[in-house]
Image (cartoon, rainbow, N blue to C red; front, side, top):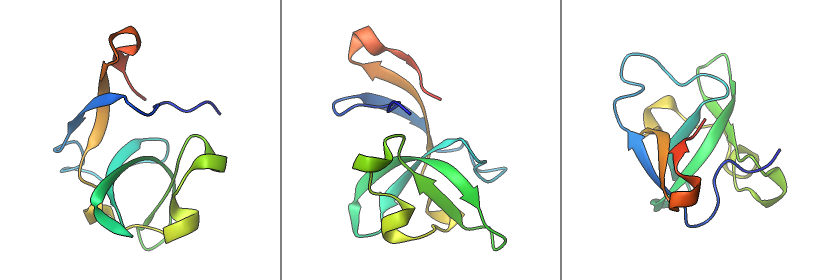
Length: 96
């Protein structure tokens, strides 16, 4: 699968998107990197296990740091849902 986002993309993210419900499989989420909390990652939810933990992956698995590296994440760690790319202008639009 081709990556949805590329280095240098600037995004708008909705911090209230998951206030009423948890992320679903296929949705993009903004989460802190469990190995370096000051670094934010944009990943796609690929599974929700029986305990409610999220497995996330990048759209380009060969070049992605994701749940294969750091394990499943608690839904409470999700900071926002990326929804719009505003830079670069030639790629501006909704992200899914």
